[in-house]
Amino acid sequence: MVLLSSTAIELKPQRINVLISFGLMAGVAAFLAAMLIAKCWGFSFNPDLKWHKSSNWSNVTFILLLLFCIVFAFWAEFCEKGNNLVEILFKPDFDPLKPTWASFCRALEAGVFEETNRYLTILALIVGFANSKYRVQITVIVSAVVFGLLHFTNLGGQDFAATLNQVIYAAALGLVLAILYLYTGKLWLPMLYHFGVDFLNYAVNGGIKAQVWSGTLSDWVSSLVSIVVPVAIAIWMMTGKRKLVIYENIERLLG
Image 1 (tube, helix red, strand yellow):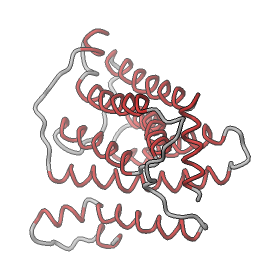
Image 2 (cartoon, helix red, strand yellow; image 1 turned 180 degrees about the horizontal axis):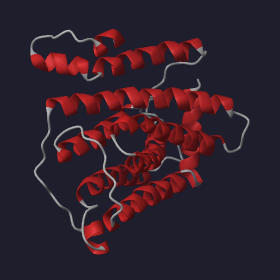
Image 3 (cartoon, one colour; image 1 turned 135 degrees about the horizontal axis):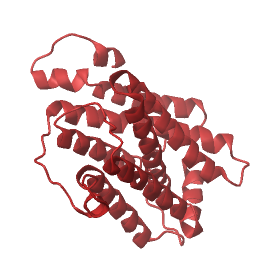
Image 4 (cartoon, helix red, strand yellow; image 1 turned 90 degrees about the vertical axis):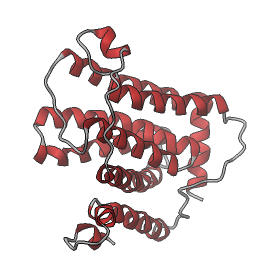
């Protein structure tokens, strides 16, 4: 399947060719590989834990987490432009969306492939730091940093400032994606959210385009908010009963 994702063979209809050439098959291959890797490590492959009744679980917390994810995704695409602080933070700019089949496939590939990698990274970290009282914090932070650093591969198509901004933003978003999985035990949730964030970005920009950094007030404010808010949410989720739910899911994940 990985070979198919990189081949130059033209398939008909064209949509199928795009589906393969934009790496979706690589995402599926990574998911299947994760099943084998988890088994080889001696763990059950548990990307979709059953809903577990726990006295520490809070429906309110879960709903708030989902609402944050939705609002943050839309803000990042529609409300980070303007000439002053109020416009940047609160004035949406709803340009017509320009979704394409290629951008849909690329976003779907990113959601499946990168969140599968996150699953394996999280599994390795929670085992490696099993004796640390900061196991949750280390797992969430390190997996997010790894996710962010992977975006340095975009240096070939955009300048360093834009890439660095993208790396930092991805790391901050990675905190939320890791929390979303560990709090719910549902890998399809961060996969779906990751897909939604990428697809919305591609639809707004009219395709898969290089990031741009101009050093304007809008750039600095949007970058600051995109970092501070996810970090604050992650810190909140790693305290109190919310952290206990994560610990419970970690034990189930290793079962």
